[in-house]
Length: 247
Image 1 (cartoon, rainbow, N blue to C red):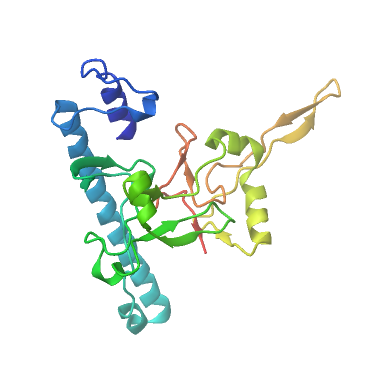
Image 2 (spheres, helix red, strand yellow):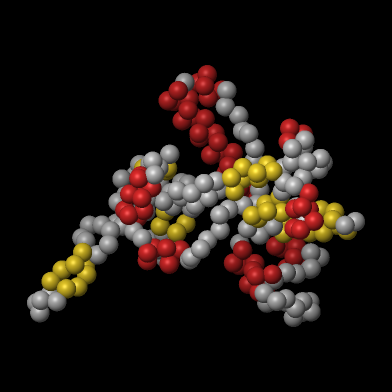
């Protein structure tokens, strides 16, 4: 959705006389055909995400019931759920604005009426997950966020290099060993094999070259992601046959 509509909106900047310092900020009036289509598609994506998380939570309860018993599963409840990467209408500085939190989520301070009653006294909970093997953070929104970013914060650790660059620097097996050394267990229930580095072989002239090990498959890269066999890009896919799970 982001790629398709990003290209569409980027192509109409001149039509609406919008000049931006960065193409990542491409936008269109909410009342325009492009703006309305984008908001409609975003609503569909957000509804799918809510439904998907509900299904995942239900599957967790089913697993707990199967292993620990139904009574334990009945005592489980969702603590908190929040969306990110969505646009919402909000009043800031006396004006109604459409705040699009790309790669971000809300972080409203204590007392904000939009926060659920259970958390209104302390501020909106903010979860910032780290990358594998690094710490994650549970924070709350502060008044400074309203002044600096319309009540917004990042929703993840960010990325220091591209996915392609990361694959060139480390293999799945090496990453798994590093995580195991930190006490992080990565399992591949489907039996998919981690990708291996090519093995050196000898040519007839005696020089060395690399060749892929026969029988190796791209599947579990020991990182709770799956790899698309079509374009070999990392993709999150909870239901993928080549997916992994980490505990």
